[in-house]
Length: 169
Image (cartoon, rainbow, N blue to C red; front, side):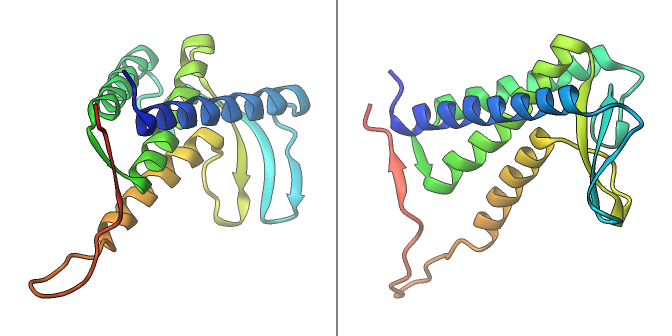
């Protein structure tokens, strides 16, 4: 039986993947390839683009291999999340963000063989990306930052660790 942290992680994952898919549907519906829509001139625009590769077009000539690898990573992370017995609150959110973003991009890969991108930060000449990419980045950043700044109690101190959510099953 799934306890609250696991149900929350799965709910976050599905909610974030839905948000990603909705944003991509809007981009496909409202934008045309090669016709950017400036939102903040010279800084940020919406540009419809498709990517058969991973970040920075890695493995773009091997989309089946990329889909297989990302599916395996997704399943391993999902299995890890479902097998956890003890959670820190930030870990539930982090894993929900990462899995939601990964699922959003996997849906694109299975449905179309490519990922829909549309967020374009032209001020720094960054590759066009999507909501799923942002979710994955935020999830990883939250996890890394929370572990970097987690207070470690030393002997005799009264410093407390972040509260854990414990599986009672």
